[in-house]
Image (cartoon, rainbow, N blue to C red; front, top):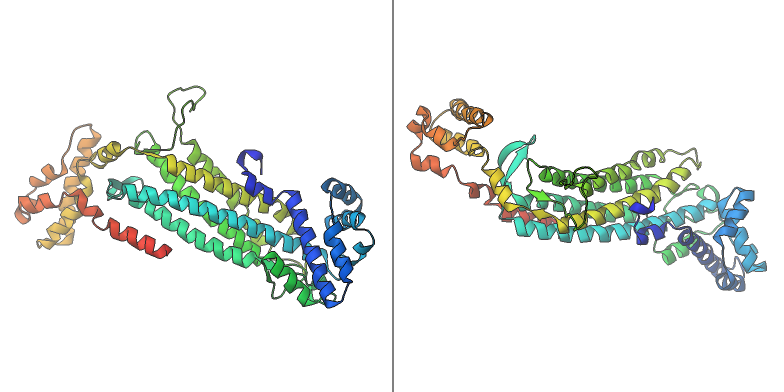
Length: 438
């Protein structure tokens, strides 16, 4: 991932030095287990820990000749260890190192992403609770529907990221497996106890059955989980983009002092953070299909998965880490314009109360079909007045309708026009969301 969208802690996980350090630890821990089992001398295992050094530039030089990264690494290690280096990698195959190291890196990445989700949940919870009693118009198909709580808008996204966290925890556990099982995974040349030792030291669990590689359905689920999280990010970013549109103007992402919105139009305050998040979500989701296709490998292994993972494992996790952090900052800095929220709520002359009038008429004995026709015909008259730029009042319009006058008293009709009615269960919904988290 390019530096523009990389945060140092996540980028460090995919730095070659971190990878080589993990490779060394795998080899050295395996030697400890081999020494304990009497496969290699105990002195050799100690020498490997003590003398083992590597140089990434030197490894690159060797790889140009060997065309094999793990062999280049082992050759470079041998240059610092000396004679005892012959006991390195006894009975192991390259995938034992590569796959186990990748599992460690993906686990490390998941830990950072879980922390990112925690920070986002804190930011969203604050927004929910400070806006729970704010009544706003709900929209379906982009059109005014019925009122809702402005806080519940964000409660829905909070719940989505709670689910995201649960899924990521499961994906982390699923990917955190170790395979030190030798060629084609039979343990013919390496004792299973060596795998168990390495797994314990690295915070992994032994892979129950590997071929020459860890099964790639684990990786597919991991990347699919990242893809779902990315879509949840885009879902919230899209809501903010719509709320910031000039015609809506109910909320706005932070606009810093000195920030410029356009090179040509000085008045512009564009939702660039939210738009950026939409783009980053596409990058993360782009890893999902190749990861699914990596599940199908020839026989006990091929390397068709290798290039895919070398590109997408860093890019997807780095991009998602950046996106979660950016979204958290956006939510923390977002401005809500409550006056505009109220203005939009009342902008259609009370048309959003149509269902309450419909139900009141049916309760009064009018058939649903006749009640619907009555309410809709009056609503359409208000619509047409608004389209012509005239002021319109749905309640006033209804008071002139014969069916309404016959079946609803002035008091009963007026009772239908109460915005607070729509958010009377908002706190109950929020409590349910919080309960689902715990």
